View: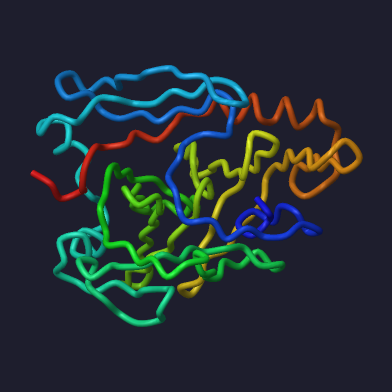
Length: 257
């Protein structure tokens, strides 16, 4: 939810600052798994999208199952419980999560560092969460908490040296998250980007793993690890990416009883 703002997409294109959305479309065969209300097994509905098939979850987590997926990082838990302030990377100050209100999102600059971009209007949205998950986004052995909000913003909470940082991602900017922390992003059915994020001293960086962007008949981008490859190689990479295990999403807010 790329005119290359989030995923270094079109260097020659115009960046669209779209209002954030958590629309999980644009990538063929993407899935969103949530825990079933009664069994702990994901309930899924398959729908067609412009670039393939998308699987959307319908189930909700039971109380018993939810207990098994309690927040592992105690500092992030305190932030979610509104007992601890987090560092707001947009405004560069400490705030309580209950006061979250924004219409902005992070974009990727030429150095791979995420910075904030205005949403293009004066809208400001209060926090309202549909789903959440825990996943080690940067492969450091510690799990981040990811919130999918009703206002189409994806929030990533990262704990570092007893501080908790929050990073907001845009429309189609982070979807199809896998258990290894990799995820997809796109601006349309014509492009798909796969990458991971990493953190250092409170900053967030993006590492592109694969790019499949058919800008037009004469301008196509096929990259793996930022190197030019064939269309067939990118297709094989995306097929392998699709087969990776999806994160398990929990319905509602992480501290809901």
